[in-house]
Image (tube, rainbow, N blue to C red):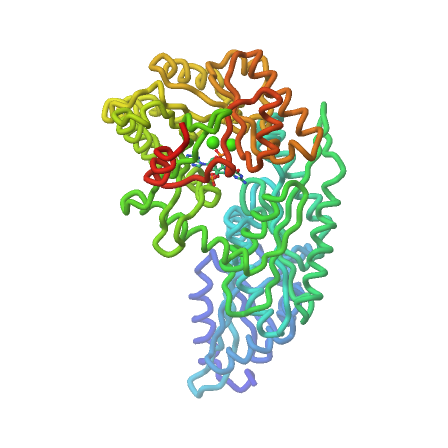
Length: 572
Ligand code: C2E
Ligand code: CA
Ligand code: CA
């Protein structure tokens, strides 16, 4: 065909080509209408490594790397035919066999009559730019410590997987693996070894997975696995996911060895099954987090599946916490009082027990909200209200004949006690209420003395100097050292109700109560038994030297007017 064009036209085309070829940083190749190479420039030869003799007369197919399939080339040429040009990234092969990416532009050249005469291809070697991109990609999408995917890439894979799963009506599974007590390991080993440990864990997990599974490190010691397109049945998928989780845990069973020591690592796994296209990647991640939380709450090396009731529980908790924040402002806190009696059944004091008057749920017991108050930090504020209310009550009773001798015991959470403002808050309350402090008893638990013992002791001593007394609540359930207990300014031991309930049935419990009473005597402390429900229990306690009681046998916790009424009518 090109034989048909005139000399003049050929010269014109040559000129065009020559002009373009001046752009020396671009490789240029000119081919005839059949695609045979007529001419290449210096840059082209430098990039590909071929000489003129080796390329002229050949088809550009000689540079093909095998990286792209036939469909790719078909599309490319179709586009050149339709629009006159194509540009894009393409992988070719140099003479030395090396594959490299280039940015390629192919243009068709037509003569004045519209007849195709030549193809001109310009190309630039973008392998360096690609390498830089790779590095950026690596940083942006991979965890530098383990080289597995990071959270961003993982979320990306999740999104893609959701579309695929949806299209093919298949299920997948999402697993999150979290190392048990990693912070502890990290602190004892040091952070360098902690990092190594994470790498080893990642390697072991990685070995257990198939190529199609995605392993990622989501956060410090949290790994995630996405298992795609497993099965159409959620139940089968569930079985498989559990099997994978087990395998992962077994992979960690072998201790991890360091130069000097070896460490046992266990982990918990949360799992959720992906089957519903309506949900987003974020939703599934939230589900699996809930499952993991449940697993963690059940100890070490535990596997838990997400189930919708977890979500319901969480929502209830969230709502409860929101309501708790409002409770003080809405005046929903109440103090109930439970009588404490001596051997004759006379009231000697009361324990103040917090109740929440909830608009929809009625009177809520502390078991449901104290942990939430503690985890949300609200305990200080609410605890302050309790102490103030109890102190006002003491001040009022001090002016009333039948009631002026009564003590009030107030429960203090360790978190409250540890707060640096605790003493000054109390001081303010004492000033405001003018309560007789020798009738105020603070109930503390042994957990208070597990950490920062000296701080706790100092605070107790300072309060003690003002007349405040201390009772050690739930005694026997903790594990503080007796030697240390002896140094605390305590006034009373309170035998935990779990022992009292069993005192007649279990000789072990009876032995604990007996030795608690003996311990109290030897430390010169009062002793009170809580949870006394029957005359038999009372009789046993009396016979073993315990003379003060609290429990349903003598009265349940009740509002203040009820307690006052009960006191007025009691036999003297
Ligand atoms: P606790 O200090 O051990 O309080 C005794 C609990 O046992 C109370 O439950 C009381 O109602 C119950 N009880 C009393 N006598 C009997 C009995 O004969 N049999 C049985 N089965 N139970 C009996 P409540 O009021 O639900 O309080 C539970 C826990 O909540 C308390 O345990 C205490 O640890 C905490 N708490 C209550 N009020 C406060 C408060 O104002 N501040 C703080 N920080 N904690 C509080
Ligand atoms: Ca108590
Ligand atoms: Ca108790």
